[in-house]
Image 1 (spheres, one colour):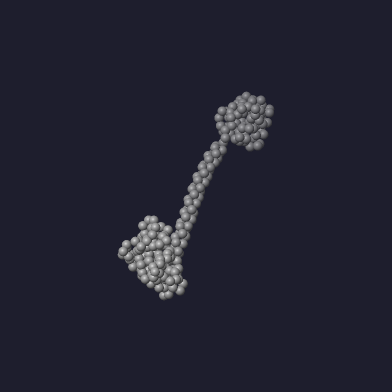
Image 2: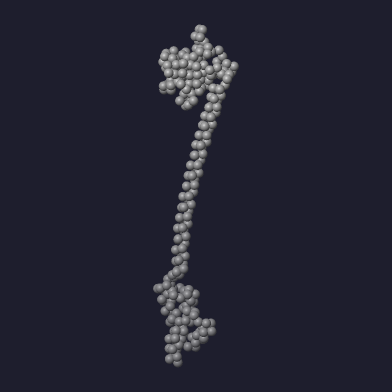
Amino acid sequence: MENENKEYIESGILEMYIYGLLTEKENEEIASHAKTNPAINDEIIAIEKAIVALSSSFSPFHSVANYEKIKEKLELKHAKVIEFEPETSNRAQYLGWAAAILLLVGIGYQYNELNITANQVATTAVEKAKLEKEFKILELKNATSETNLAVVRDPKNTVVNLGGQVVAPESSAKIYWNKETEVVYVDAANLPEPPDGMVYQVWALKLNPLTPTSIGLLDNFVANNQHIFAVDKTADAEAFGITLEPKGGSLTPTMEQLYTLGKV
């Protein structure tokens, strides 16, 4: 009997029984042997204790279900057992970190793209505003050019040529005067740019006696690149003159600074 038990134990079937690798029928046969044969039962208990002791120090190499089953049999649930997460859990953890990193990289990329898009939109808006401003300036210049062209071509206008005087013999100007509407325009293209703090002043003159009447200043001389200016209306001028005066104009013309003069 003892030799039979030894052969039975050394066959490895008890280990397979404990690991749950046998068929249901084989499990029932071993359980029946254990009940009637103390040596078999003691060997089963010894194998189970050895497995639990080994599992407490090292990662278990058997299934969790079998391990728990063995613990229940030995009533060792109260004992401290070191549990190790299965490899798949570690792999899942690494995958989780990798996914989180990829997510952060993706968010950073999208944030960067969003900033680029926002900057592009802002740049486009600035460029649009600049173009609109330039367009309005062009419209204004075109309107001014059309007005000036209409003034020059208006057959109802009387053109008065103003010649250069002693202070500026190379200067000249033209007056476009519509006697019906009394509207007066001055073409000052051949006048030099006035010095800082000075302005050209236009005078309508009565000759007998000499009576000058100011009909306007040629302000913003540099900004008006065509140098055609609308001045105040006049009804009965006999001559026109242009003098250089301090900024803001003068009540009477400074004759020493008479640049141009011409009779109607």
